[in-house]
Length: 440
Image (cartoon, rainbow, N blue to C red; front, side):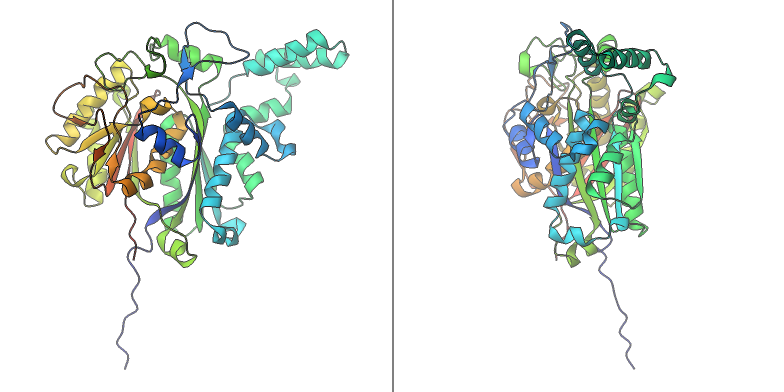
């Protein structure tokens, strides 16, 4: 009688990343992002836009012009009229992530491919679209040019009867999901999440849940957006969140005593997620294991930093970790006086005397919105491979001695796990926990 009991590998159900794509101010791909971070080389530049003039917005994290053009070219020509620059960047990032995941990925049936998109809100009328129509009306004597301008003005003032359907589609909050699903042939479970870093955390949670439930065999998670819209920029300026830009490219000074605000940015990051067992069977290399994510109302909702630390602490405990055993913390570090003060208090409450080093990517990329949490996950494989932690660029005077902020030069250290912290402008805070993937 055979008494052998079939066993399964406990690591087979782990959620791992097998492909990464990035279109960011630092360039294309995770290696460009890692190099800029390790060298403390900000990708922030003077604000520029052919249709917006401002003396208040001094710097911005622009995706390079040539990369914007590559992004546009990655979208099938017939779909371009439906998209925006950041949705084009999302399509290119998704394409790169799928290519990095290996040839076997293409054998996964389209209806078993999940798609989970985090997108910044883009419902404001594009200033660029208005200026283009106005310029055309000035130079084009045809009746159609005048009709186009009248339609755009009507849209600005809410006359739904004259809406151009293409403009409406571009403004939808599932625009990125629609373009990727059509361009890359996703027909499985899907969901769109809106606004800031919280959307990316929600997309990660949904993707992991769907994979664990067996509702899909792979999940593409994409975060994309841009703060380069006049009403968004004006709102952040009025709220006092933006740096005056007096230090040029070094304007964003996370946690520094001389910080005076953040620098906004744009871009897209895409991650291919799979169950570890499925990835192994098709010969894919796991890059990072995602343990979990958490999201809850933040300080603006009446919850103080000490209580807010319970979310990340519970996330660590759920996976058998404590601050003492954590490899590193990637702090948000927006650079505003208020946000960084609250986060510094949260770090003190969470880490206490653990001595865990803390760094931040923010001074290099600027505040990315929905792409932010995914950008830090995209860096995790390089952290594990290099076993060093890049510094917080421009940090000279930290808020206190209780937290071990990495300053000056990269810190050599064995890193097996990373906790990434995030806060949003609309009142939420959260975290993502990842670790070095298990390899048999």
